[in-house]
Length: 193
Image 1 (tube, helix red, strand yellow):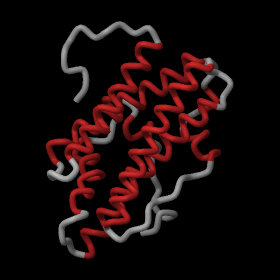
Image 2 (tube, helix red, strand yellow; image 1 turned 60 degrees about the vertical axis):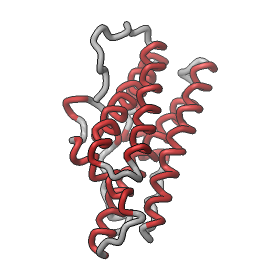
Image 3 (cartoon, one colour; image 1 turned 90 degrees about the horizontal axis):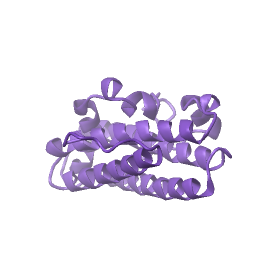
Image 4 (cartoon, helix red, strand yellow; image 1 turned 90 degrees about the vertical axis):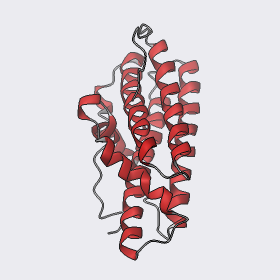
């Protein structure tokens, strides 16, 4: 299956909300393929791993695009744009790690979609102000943090640390966004996972 034949649901549809997120098992499959990069596998398993990793890359492409759209929307204050561009850089790093894993498996990484595709997938037309943009970003980041945390136990030694680091990045992003929105600090422990 080629990247153009792979139809991906949006990042928001996969990891946007706790009750509507990609299952932990499903997301575990996305990243668990990374641990096979150094181990011998059958051609079928390798092909499946590449497809799963490409699904994760597609999600990172969408996250990168979301921050780009927000940065150029005119809805954000300059300081907020600066933070978003920094977060976008983190997502580019995640994407690059996933691309490296696909290449180690001998595959070709999926390419990003057009900007128009992401504008529609993210429902950009409904964003009217800075708060709308921040709420969408917060929803995406919380979902991503929970998804990566769910992966850690199922990953091999090579990638459980990477998943934990990505989860940490996502949780950090969520904390900053929640603070910017004036949300209260949660009273209960174990806010993610």
